[in-house]
Image 1 (tube, rainbow, N blue to C red):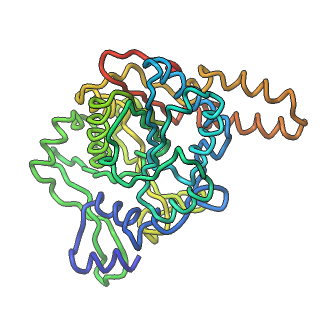
Image 2 (image 1 turned 120 degrees about the vertical axis):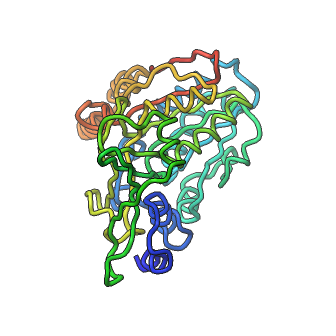
Image 3 (image 1 turned 30 degrees about the vertical axis):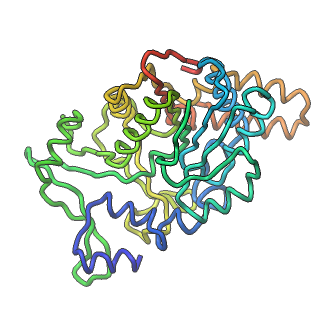
Length: 354
């Protein structure tokens, strides 16, 4: 908190995306840099932590994709923001059952938090896995990028429209320099032009501009175009244009005020999947369909797999597994709000799960 206040005392105000970036990723002060946010004792739970069946299904999908592109002798999987390492660990448990695939595989975990890296290394002890902190380290392929709740935590800008004038959301200090507040400044012409180019300006008062996610998508697209492969990402978001404030802060599994103790809570926003699709297509990738998590996992056979596993379980174990499965796939839980997007090299038509 003091870090942000000190910055604001000097700069007077900073754009929302800079505020999010400092709150989450500042080397000393950032939320992701100093704690494990995941799990029952953390602030939120992700699909891999709900059930290991999630990782198993993603692993089967990866093996099928590898087969589809001709079983290359070298194959790179890059997990974006691997959290506490649970997904990677679950993937490896399944991958090892496919001998030819496993012998061709290398995994890179893209992680900038030393705190999370230590947690991941305690969980993952495998010579196939390397840690990287920069996409420039990716220098061969085919490469498949996997992201689970990665893009939602990248900084965004918010622009408000009032009487045909656009205002950008900033963060500044109150008069006594003790509290943080929002401030609106007239948006500059280059920002408005970028929003127009992305077709983000239409009816409604609020525009969310995922400035960092777009940069990341463009970087990933270059790697896929150069080395072949694809991007598979799971995140909460919407397919149709939404003109509302989706920014939220979470602490102890509850939503809290975004400006309350920044650096001590998670900050996320919902993904505009239609925009993501357009960005990836502009960058020469093929995106056939965006589906939801429930449909994707069901098409991969998660229900059938659960039924097979349940035959050797006690009643208590079975009840626990199906309760967790329900959380992953039911439309009133994670099954519908979480969307799944797959982008691949132009001309390729792998569609398992979609």
